Image (cartoon, rainbow, N blue to C red):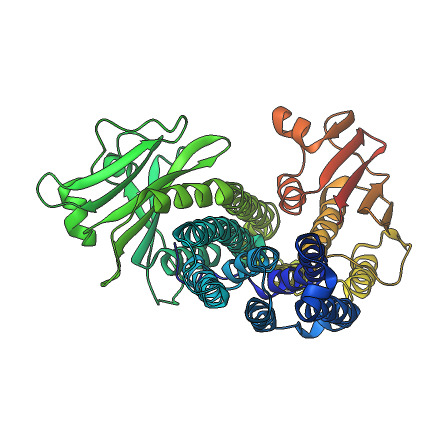
Length: 565
């Protein structure tokens, strides 16, 4: 496990608060135990000391609750000091068990198991020495044996509590680490940066020099390999490899979790089937050329899933000098990490796929617009110029009017091309600017198209993520441009509404509609190979739902609903 395995600040604050609640309970148990063993008049001093400890613990409890935001708490050192003083002044050791077990658990959680056991051993040794010092000279041997047995039993109990505290510490740290890993795999960061942060965290956690991620793309029939050397901060670019290299990175068995601490000769490795935990009789090995290419001396490797099937492997390569070899616990922890991040990896890969499809659809749209618009106009201009050239000597009057018409055509197409270039520029749409941008584009649309457009927005200010607003504005703009070019409509109504759970955009026109009739979702349109491709992909990118209603000859309606929260 990592030497950095300590609870995070939020966990520390929560734990200190739990200690504050437990402290008066432990003090009261010690008081009751002491009163059960001796009459109150015989133990006035230790009893008064424990009661004072209980009162102080109760008084500090509301103070710790009030100041926990400042990470303030009664130091554990005070509890250790209280236990030592009680052992010194009390003739009975049994009540100290409650204080000792409390300290054993808290110290193991705060620091580590070894320190907690050493601390408890020292306190018990102090108690044993004081007990033997108080005993009468020439005490029988059985009293000594009883003291030693009491010491051993007490130490075993304290060690058990320390073990529980250490396990809680490790669990709290692991949960914090897994949460941090999940946060690195964020769709807004993009695939390359998300994978770089993931591999960097893994290198730091397992103290390795390199980390690799190999992914098999079934559609492209290629293997993509991301490699990070510890300490690098440059943007990762995947290496594109043919499927014939699969045995070098995906190995023969995708269900195997394995480790090789040495690759020389027969090597030293172990592993198991991740489905049932059964040990592997033959541990897969990385081919020699791959070992030499990447300088692999030792490694851990586990598979990760996409769509509930193994799709790639994570590698941790070359333990840092001075570190011990990998053990079973390292491979188990690595396997647990891979299971935890598989869904996050799937999300960023899915987003990458959707963005690639959106880019492809956008390029197709641009190509189609250029072909159907400017390119056709240029061909028409070429034909008209050829006709005018032939008339130049015989009909000069017609040439002059023809040139004036051509000049106007070129001017119109220049304006159209200028608008197209403007629309291709990347937009920085934020929720605070969304409404103003929509109104500005609506005004421009009315002026250029001559169509009636009603823009209805139920709120002057939207509360949605910027990436959602950006994609929704692109959908709004593309839908209006499609209506202007293809729908032959005279009236368009756009509605934008938001409530606590969703953001909805509706675009309604009275044009010719689509070639199909009825109401269909985006998935249904995909199966039928119908509908606006780019709008479908942009809707999926933000987790939205697209619905298209079409009545040929009477118009169409697009509805996009994006869940919030």
